[in-house]
Image (cartoon, rainbow over all chains, first blue to last red; front, side):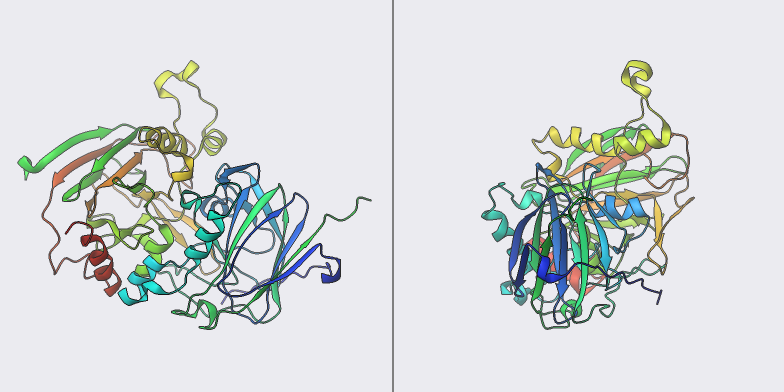
Length: 220
Length: 237
């Protein structure tokens, strides 16, 4: 197992301008303005947080998993990773990470992929795709399924072996671990706090997360 | 065999191409020289909101690359295409296509004004032009597959381009399991370290093929694929 690097943030929860608990199985669509800091905190450990970002001024310019891993030459997201859009813009930069690595290859669960991966009878189970679509249906920006691209799975560990096997490894997260990022432009954040019960991405027990936003530090 | 051939063309370096690949036909790509790379998109031609899903393809088969026996999944739990033959052994799923910015940074600026049709084309613009012919745009772009190219991931997660994966004459053949809109861009792999823009020509052939039976190797690759085929075949009953 390679060494993971942990980076702490100096920001205090009491100074946050937004602080909310998002239960498992819920979606969240929220703006984050340029310069603001955004933290996702894994309250109980090993929770997968499926996340997409959009350029707030142009939703057709969206988080691009491929551009992001190609730009840094590495498949894992951690401190220093620039989250790159489909048009090549930097949406956000990860500035602190006490988990050490996050996945962007594993995508989001859906009713349809559950029928393939587990059993045809699993179609009824709640999924990230459903949470995404419900948030999109209510979005003022008119987001639809067309805008669903490959997402980030914060706190998930999906290594690829040198032989090219995709593996779902034990979680590297734990209660209280967090990832924090600075918005480099005005963005929209779309989250599904993953309800998957069929695989160990949530340790078979989906749990709440805490979402915090801080305004940019005062100049000077 | 020959009478089953529907199409037989050559894609020159830099070329874009699209085709509605009907269920029951197969697309065969042949590298005419070493160093080939074809970036490719796959969408359901009958309802293009359903499209290739890279994560679902990799997760269902526990793979990070594509070769013979693998299938390409849509986001609806169905199989777009099956890889029924592959001499190459590895096709990249992780690195996407070039865009204008990357192509200019790597190979220098070209323009139609100066280079005419020898200007350096890039994958993203090629895709957007071809998709536009079907009323589709950048919001509809799935993750591309890079045929003939190999990129491995080391234990620390670093991406490493492996030169020499495809040799002249190597072919890969994809059987359509639904009516599939295929878009191809014969442009260099984005991690190819070569500094000269010289994508070799690639032969494109389409032929009629038999429907996959109960013992089809792609269907039997994993239990997941058997369910993927069931989901797909119920569309055409």
